[in-house]
Amino acid sequence: MSLAVHCAHAPPSVHGGGLATLLGPDAFAAASASSGYGREAPGRPPEFPSVPEERQPASMAAFTERSPPPGSGPQLQEADVWRLECVFAAGLAPEAFAKLPPSARQLSFQLRPGDSAAKVVGREHQPEIFAALLAHEPGLLSRVSRNHFRIEAPPEAKSSGVRVTNLSANVAVVAQRPLRQGESAHVLDGDTL
Image (cartoon, rainbow, N blue to C red; front, side, top):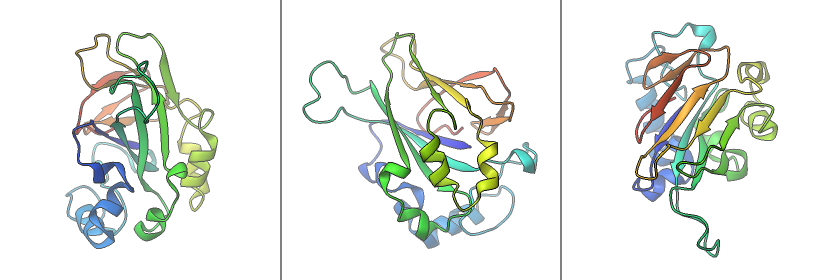
C-alpha cells in the first residue's frame, strides 16, 4: 500500500477523483513510466528500488486534510477531519479506476491534535474498501494486513501532518525510505507512504 499526503491548501481537483482523473489517463501513464522507478508500464505506480518486488504496493492513496462538512457545527475544526483517498489500485486501468464511486476510494476520519485517539487502517477495519479496490487482483488483498497502519494526530495543535506507524509485517515505504513493522514516521504535505 502506498499513500500520498496532501493538506487543505492543495488544489480542490486533488480531492476529486485521484491522480489518474486529475492528470488524465495518458498523462498518468506517462508520469508513471517516466518516474525513474521500476518498470515502465502504463497505469502502474512507481516502484521503489529499495523494496523487494513481493513487498511492492497494492494500492496508492492520498491523505487529504479537509474542512468539516457544512452544518457539522463548531465542534469540528479544519484539521480534525482527514480523508484517505486511493489514487491507484492494482489491476485497474486508469479509466476503470476513475469510474469507481467515491465511496469505494475514500475513508474519512477525525483526528484532533493532542488527542490520544488513533485510527487504524487495514483489511479488518475497512474490508469493503479494500475488497472493492483490489477486486481485479484478489491475490493482493492478503498484502494489506488486517491492521496495516496506525494514524495519529500530532501532539500539538500547531503541528501539521500525521504520525503513521507501520503495524504490518510488510515493509512500508515512507518518503521513499523503508518503514519496518513498529516503526513510525511523521508525514507532511507531499510525503508518501
